Length: 257
Image (tube, rainbow, N blue to C red; front, side, top):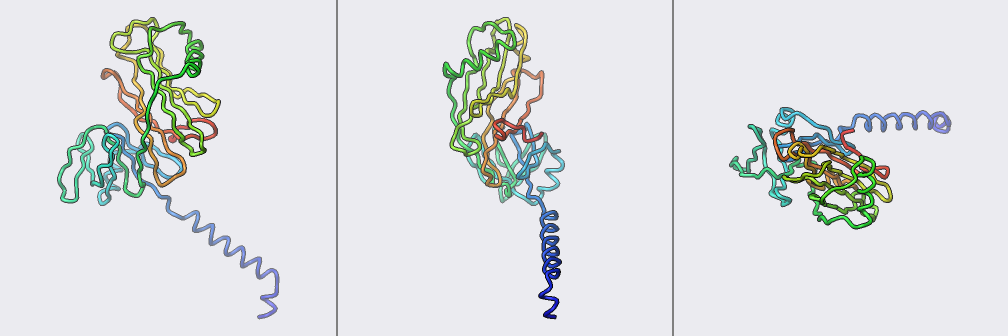
């Protein structure tokens, strides 16, 4: 027996066996996942790495015994069970229906959803140069005024430096500029990227989508926070949608990509 223990090959085989066992458990470890609901607009299944759209039926099937943490109008409402009948419905521990507005974010309890506070401001003269660059690239020489002029500054990746989201548009009910535009621009460090661009002709006001920051959230206690952008409409020409982003490689990356 002593000869076996002293044999280097014994330790090599033992190390390989232990390594194989560790790899087996890593590969077979169940990935933590949960569901994320944005009002009655979009539903996602999320892990630590990404969030993908998911069918309502799948959520109901998997969450029949689970609870969802709900924020309404930015305020934490508590834990509720859910069901879907033309829209999401929420029920307390006594199975009483809870009247919830359409402005809510809800997530499976295991995602540990946190809804972050943020503020908006108007663009500075320096930031206006970024807008002017995109206007020039799209052959727009003038506009009457910025009807939507919103900048959100927030440190999404917790590196001590704020990133920016700028939503800029000349569209309202009566806009009669020759060209109508909406730009949603991300700024990470000195790099800008266009998240959304909408260019329409004069008098197409009601066809132009409206964009807004729907929320900034954190799930699973991750280092980085996520950005949710809502795309809506003045009229019923299109369906609203939500896109989720995280800051990665000096850019806002769509989580579903």
